[in-house]
Image 1 (cartoon, rainbow, N blue to C red):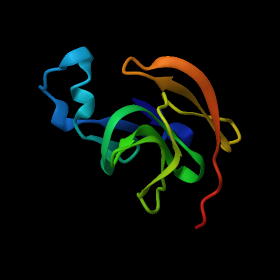
Image 2 (cartoon, helix red, strand yellow):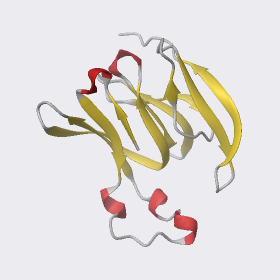
Image 3 (cartoon, rainbow, N blue to C red):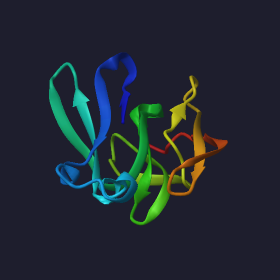
Image 4 (tube, rainbow, N blue to C red):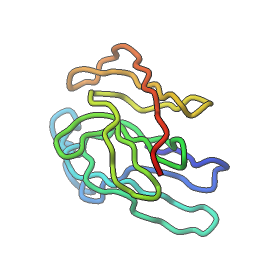
Length: 136
């Protein structure tokens, strides 16, 4: 699950070192229950940075407005769409729900997410979420 920063200077991705070597379990979900971390790989400097840890059951990540990151996952028992500010690195829940991977509009003001239900993430309706500017 990866997304690219503006200009392809970096790659954002979710990874779970704790799930390496773990049995996939029933329907492959056992690995999703392990902690997942959000990383940023700077392609020019060739450096890797851990941004946020503690996600489970991730479904996607994308670069957001103001160099923020949007993640669809569970954190602290709350499933939803999370916004991580580059300056604070504190996850902010912007919409609760069970969503697929987020897709940001060209204007960076709206993100589209596919609502999913059930363990198999059956398709549902597309939800548009307005991304309001953060107070700096």
